[in-house]
Length: 258
Ligand SMILES: Nc1ncnc2c1ncn2[C@@H]1O[C@H](COP(=O)(O)OP(=O)(O)OP(=O)(O)O)[C@@H](O)[C@H]1O
Image (cartoon, rainbow, N blue to C red; front, side, top):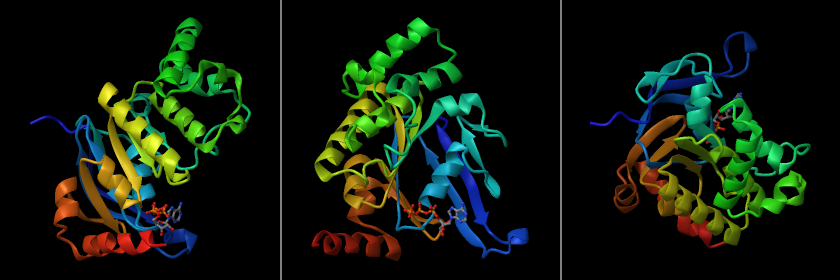
């Protein structure tokens, strides 16, 4: 059996309570999952079900209240190491907001090459041009700033930045939900191509079940911080076992009527 690329064991995150006197929220409540190399793992669920918090725990942006995350079978420590950062990258929902408005695209793409890989200037230039090519953007754009780009182009830059350090897994948190439908399709096609070319694994978080069905190999359904059902795509969409999954799937056509 191959070692999973990523494994979560009984992962929990509680917000509030204690000294804060805020209400206790079990945002992630005992999640177990494994993601294999090259797999696209979808996480679906309604707003507030804990998808983003789970993603942040998996990548080390948030510390778990309890439970563990293992990368390549090795437990991730309390501090987010450079190695972990290099292996796992994040693409955010709001493409423009995720890019520093004061930096040029070249500077944005060079940052991980400097900080995570320690590349020389000449190597960085070559790599940055290659990254632009991989996401179908012209290298003339390198000296421009994020506000000069459309949402779709900005998301391509976000994807290029995530690819820069040659990761094995990219967590995509609602990567197309802020984009027009026609642009969504282009970005999804790009993600599919990159996955095939580079052998990447994705964790794809979305409330859009059609997008998840089109892209993911395995799907986990979250409700109130728990994974209520996890199955290969065809099984989950073909014969869902859990009542909550059935309700979620049944709500799609009526939403699409509007
Ligand atoms: N930093 C925080 N402090 C307190 N509560 C939080 C924090 N982050 C998330 N929560 C709460 O945890 C729960 C899960 O939120 P989370 O954002 O993970 O859900 P989600 O499924 O990603 O929702 P959405 O699709 O709307 O982003 C929610 O009740 C949310 O209000």
